[in-house]
Amino acid sequence: MEVYKRPYDPHRPVVCLDETSKQLIGEVRTPVPAAPGQVAHYDWEYVRHGVANLFMIFEPLAGQRDVEVTDRRTKKDDAERLRQLSDEVYPEADVIVLVQDNLNTHSPASLYEAFAPAKAARLAAWFEFHYTPKHCRWLDMAEIELGIIVLRYA
Image (cartoon, rainbow, N blue to C red; front, side, top):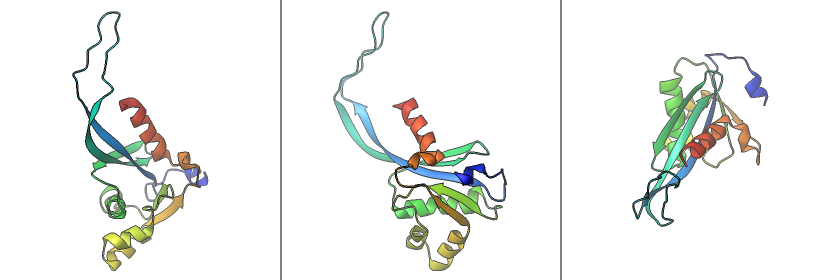
């Protein structure tokens, strides 16, 4: 919680990172649209079209958020998000203060799986890692942002 009390500093942005998987489905039967006095009707049966992953990057003090949709969420995918943050989104930052949950892919070790040792070390040094306690994932504001998206588009 102390991380969120820090004043805004563009050279030390506080950034929250989280991801979620979503099943992609399609209708088997054409829905019956709503009419006066009648709600729309949807059949319970659906066609599965795979799964997509949403990576949420949220900087609460700047009010900035970005969602990237990917095919999967492996350690290499997580490492690529960190590279993107350091090299493209915050290249002028001295340190990126990163808040994330304790998922097994959220580790500096993922950088070493994805990149050569020198590049992985450079990227790891760019971050100040903060992990939310187990069973307190809601402390990661990116988790809250993803929850809003899920509720809005469910």
